[in-house]
Amino acid sequence: MTIEIIALIGLVAVFAISALRNVHMGALALVFSFIVGIFLVQESLDDVLGGFPVDALIILLGITYLFGLAHETGTIDWLVDRSLALIGNRVALLPWGLWAIATLVACLGTSHAAFAVVPIAMTLAHSHRINSTMMGIAMSSAIVGGALAPTSIVGITVMSVARSSDIPYNPALMFGLSIGVNALVVAVAFFLFGGRELIERTRAAGRVGDIPAGADGAGAGGGIAVDRRTDAPATTERTSLTAMQLLVLVSIPLLIISFFLLTLAEVDINLGVVALVIAVVIALIDPRIGKSAMKRIDWNTILLLGGIITYVSVLTRLGAIDQLGEAARSVSSPLIAALVICVIAALVSAFASTIGIIGALVPLAVPLLVPGGGLEMTGFIYALAISASLVDCAPFGTTGATIVASTVEEHRARVNRNLTRWGLSMVIIGPVVTLATMVVPFMIAA
Image (tube, rainbow, N blue to C red):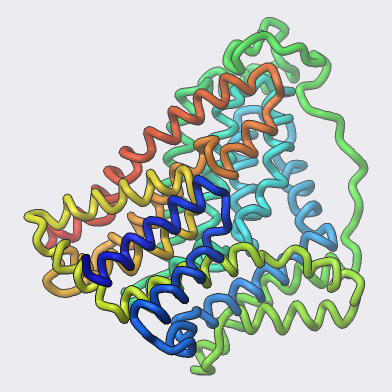
């Protein structure tokens, strides 16, 4: 057995051990990097650590710190509260409105921030007699859709890994495709799980100014006792923005505009540096909030991404990636190879880390994207990232488990079953749809 094969087996072992023993994947990957790089390949420690993605981790550090300040000052809660007030009790708009709110929050540094919206959404689903499965899928689609924004961790990961592999990548297009696909997913779930009944109920409410007395909430999975005088939870007294909340709110567009202007001026800087500068300025104004926001920096993801990319860098220098490229070229149809990679990404992502699998598979898929690989200059990188994220509603991972846990107890078992079926179906449906829309048209045009 060659060193290259041993190193590739090590990558599989990282995922397997992490899943079976619940050991941090990034820490495992770093340990395997040292074992393979120093002892098998006989590289120096400096060479091994040369693959550590400092630029990407600075982005993660700066972004999560800045948006940690947004959470600690209550700015995110203020945005959610104002958005819900705009929706009101228009019941058919609630799943869509909450999807839009959670998507916006998921864009702000870490998609896990949108988990704060999940309990609100699932509670509103119960009180408004909305199918909990529909709302759960809407929340999952919001979290994974917003996660691929260029200001969120997963989007930053895909961008960093793609560019480090010299793959042409447009973060705005990635985000747009992610939002489009997830909007389609929500639309399908909306009409499969009682959306028509919600539309009729909203129309009836508009005609008579109240919810019809005969509505029994069958679409929600059984009669749920609610107050017929109002279909919405009691509203709390609204508070105005504080000075710190206003400062943080202004800092978000300032981040985007500053980075855009610096890029136009050809200043060699990344988004994380700009975010870190803004965050430190805010922390200087109020050190107490700056200190409390430190705990919201996503060190877990920083270690995960750092470990995976470092190990993949060892594989690249070793030549293992080139061997996989030769194997990929030997497949009679590059499209079949692409489908297999996307299905593997989706299946592993359902049970393990989406960021980890993207960080590992994007470099492994490079041979399909280079001249002669058969899928030159296509949307394969976008299809791979979206395929790996669509399965996250399955309750095996953090997103799906949070949704199930936030569901009222009487519906929890049903939602768990439905999200399991939905998530596992996305293992096949996601890759087929994304490849058909983002890869096949380019192949036909060529």
